Length: 385
Image (cartoon, rainbow, N blue to C red; front, side, top):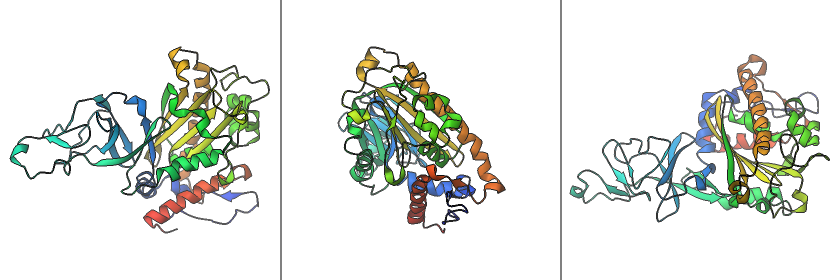
């Protein structure tokens, strides 16, 4: 499996190479990514308040695995493989629901919300069956920022170091992500996008703003420096706060005032937009009055589901304050970005792109993502470069 090509700068000192086109189209590479990235690292899968009552459950897919996320009566939120331990049928066949117990529809093996086997036909005649051993297989789970994060690895990376610590470090002390109180915000809007493009194209797009002047007229009106190709994400993990235009009142589609500002943001965070990528599949965008969170779920080498949430203060949601203009701005940005990614995906198979493309100076920081990607596949799959 080839995941590398040129390691040296391309002709012309301003350019750096990208991965080969096959990195975005090869099913074998995508399978390795599922196994060695998405199934080994922490994935943000859903909002904790979307399963607010004991018995509420939702089905999610991480890598190649289908999971049940359920709010239990005794143990908070738990995650399990959606696999009956009798003969392997899917236990939950819908997308979401509410139940007192989880029951397989094949032979009626029944599980408590906490996962242990509690009933099955003739189970009393099999006293040697260990009900915990034959319970649903659990998945590692953490809650942070009001979201549920899961990891399929037998020994997951330390969450406090790999996720929480990295994000806080990259935001810095003054511009701390904690100032936004994301865990206390409520969902104002959510939109799901079915994008016909490889997940790496979406990350690369999100990390740079060289394209902003071309396809984001509303965004560059609100944040003029984006028209110059400056990105909120910089080399060596630096997060750059991008300032609103002088006459701009808020992060809205027409630059008008937004809603109630988040109370704990620092002075340096006022009238600024920050963005960060939390590898492998989360984007966090912060502005003074709301936060936007993207979650990616790769389906194939050429298809990715992206779920985008807009989060506001509880009083904004409870009082039904107008959030439409705030939502519309990034919804348009999403549509513009995803269309660009979809128009790029077919060219990844072209002979003209077999050797890959180029990164200009304002995109050089994307090399860090490419390096991380190569190292994950080399280290876990031991694929040849």
